[in-house]
Length: 370
Image (cartoon, rainbow, N blue to C red):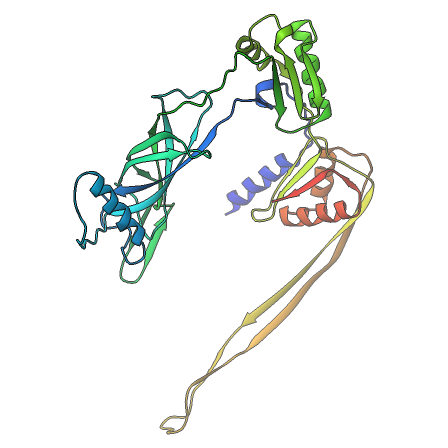
């Protein structure tokens, strides 16, 4: 226990040491999206067979029986008027993403998710399922064995589930049947869309591209869009983008603090600045203890009965040793962390302090709570 405590203390000391941040140069391809180069979502309804008694029940999922009957009839098997109760079949929704410029015959990954009361898809096989895009057209067909992402086990008095056994994946499980037409070579202008729109970043991208080609082929339209004039470029569009996407720039980011209240995680950006403020921290602990008392009747009593009487004890422990600290104005991130560490605050107290400083107007950063 002592070694664990020392390890935690060492981690905290290293975490709160002053840090020098530097803006790293990144490739343009890592901060922008290219117009027309995008994936398309596909979805379909299918059946998984071969389950070990963990499929849908007909009472709760009648659509599974109807789909299975329709499938068998298409295969030449007449099941009209027959009553069958398969427990090795499950109805699923199949989803996939058609990558840009996918050609007919190429294979993509798919995900299957049960929509009935199936308890486990482990060991099942997806039957041929057409996948449709938003326009209603079929772009791929999926089929293959399912890799489930978890398991479940149950007994007479207990059950345990690990992961999500009612969903799974089929690597390379769909084959592309239809291509999305897009004539990239005929484009006269190409737009680059910034994933995080910013005037400074867009201006730096424009300057870096024009400097690399030694001519003004890039033009900033707004903080989120850069337009490339292919006609003025010394090469074709595909080669132009191949060179542009590897140009390095220093992106500008907003000062931001991200707080995860569930785990107590606080992530502070490098540009966080604060004004002069004072902060105090006090501890108030309320303890409620329940000690039930059992009262029994006298021996050989005919009318008496055993009852349980509640006994509650409440104690309040307040730490009168309040500390007030003054944080100077225009301090950096490392100074802010060092000052809060001097107060001995933990992650939870740090979250409360940051919220209060933001409410007081002394924290000059965007506060994002997730």
